[in-house]
Image (cartoon, rainbow over all chains, first blue to last red; front, side, top):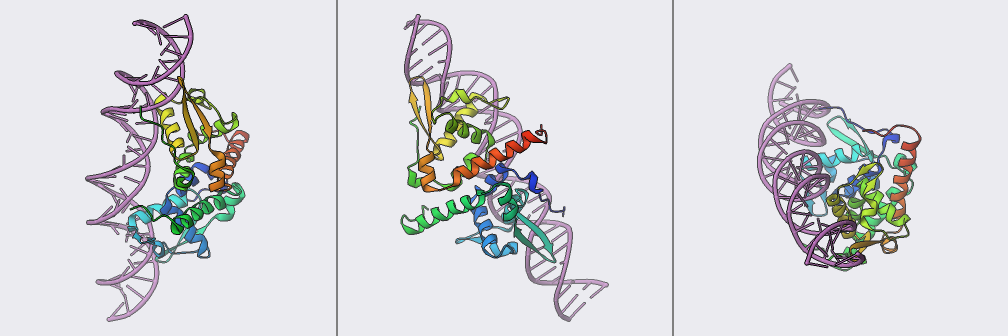
Length: 119
Length: 119
DNA sequence: TCGGTAGTTCCGAACTTTCGAACTATGGGA
DNA sequence: TCCCATAGTTCGAAAGTTCGGAACTACCGA
């Protein structure tokens, strides 16, 4: 197992952040990490909605979030703790994360409200 | 040539917008359309920085921006006019576009300032 | 009608994403 | 200490996406 890579705050890239959050599953995972007091084990998030995400895909999602600089992961015994790097991202790109999470939240609310989700 | 597809304001999706703007070329094209009074021909944007973007790639970039709902394109004789749909996107997802364009702008400023761009 | 310009489509090569299977690392008993 | 269970990673094949050159369509002016 190779060591975990985390970009320095000054190496954060807008493109990587947008790419990471352009996947609704990853955005949901990130939103969960924030909501859950900024600390969470990976496997606690293995279901998004009613879909189960396979372990290998989950592992990849966490890697993408980590390498975009959105979360910081550390091995703690047999599991992993994931902290959001909100403050660092926020100070480098003010308003970016709130706007993105808001956009997703607004969209979900609308779907839940009215139109049924497409199959 | 098939007709141009534009999503309705209520069909705009955060994921599509983030995906469209996660590509720095597309983000630059979009920023240009905004800056240039919201109207621009495609080929006017065929260079980003000092790189030339091939026509077919450009055409695809415009398609992605259009289908994400970020721009509205109409054929005008031999060329295309592209309007940004800023107001519509902004009213559906407040703060999203300014935050993203700001993030890119801040990043460019920093690169221009100090470290040389990687090859 | 022809020529030029603007943009699109097609298609193959290169790249990315997904997910099951096999693997590694760690901790807790027997 | 050895073995098992658990948490996560890596591998590899299949499916999907992106890129860009060549050929195409659409429109305008001469």
